[in-house]
Image (cartoon, rainbow, N blue to C red; front, side, top):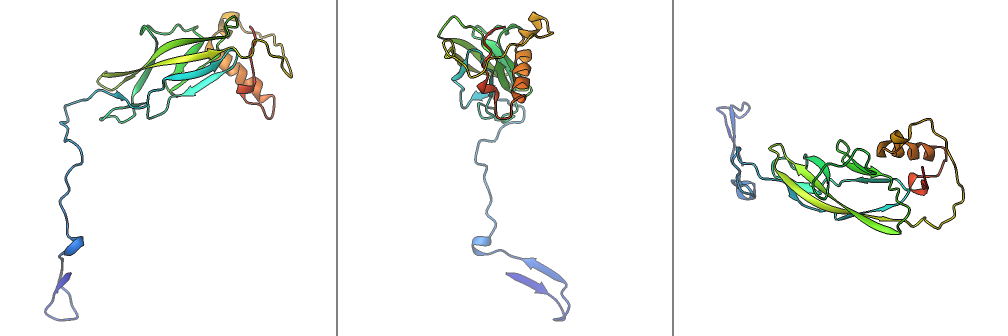
Length: 195
């Protein structure tokens, strides 16, 4: 309903609005508890990773889903740290590494003597106040290529120190570059047999 006030019909001085019925303003109440600006809740594990499958000789790249952790104040913007099961830092030469900027695990497991084994880790999420949530996860490693023949086998001699090539990032770059030599090949179709 609109009410117009005017001394003459052709000139309008003021317009007032008065909502009625379903258009009437209804006061809204917050759907959740009102948090004090000084109170901080720790993050929680919303969707745990549980396990990741890896294959000996193949590049593993696993991006941590954004909804793995949740924090009421920071939503999913948390700092992630990847540790051994005993919460010790990973060695820089460990086959599996974590890229905290891109929030992904990567590496090439190279343990050909066993058919199947697993390794346990902890992914820790920190909020801005250093409160944490922990997601324990298992990397299950199978060696399904240990008696398999391949359609093509290549040998490379690299001008890189052996210790440098053992780094997970170096192996990842190497396999990604080898895959670019072929038109229809992804890194999951390449197997690194030995170094």
